[in-house]
Image (cartoon, rainbow, N blue to C red; front, top):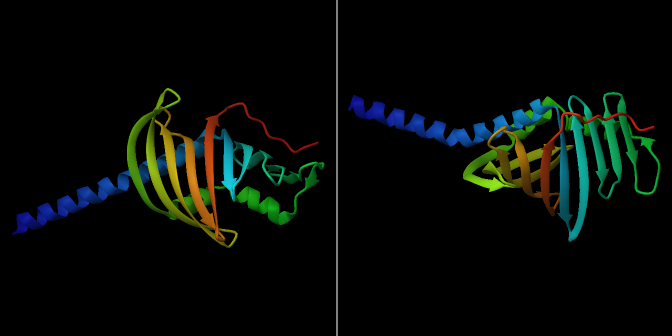
Length: 196
């Protein structure tokens, strides 16, 4: 009887660690992305039958440049944030906008994203643009600026580097659904400064 209990406990522990492994692998990929220090995301978002494209450059810690999209361009640096609505010039962003932009560049945001993950499924390995990638399906809920959103994400992680290279995100917030496709490229020479 003792042997049977021992085997049951060992089986339970083994199955628990096997279930945790995909989540750990996703978290390791997010950490590798954060550790890369600089990357470019090409983003296409579809909301209410409208499609818009953005390019977001990130240099950690604390620098981001967003180009395109319905709200125009934005630059965030440790010194502040600036906005350029379509057809207008650069202006200093309000403090709340600056704080929101900086939030997405923080270690706290990564931890909040991890805490919101409800499930992760390992979908196996495929080729993407001629390179092997590991694919995961994530279900996640997060609250950002008081707004709760739920998302279902297909995450593609480059096998060689361990970094995310593509995300396909179906999300819902404030009664609206959207689909976002992000393609990530890691660039060591990115520079982001305040606009002139």
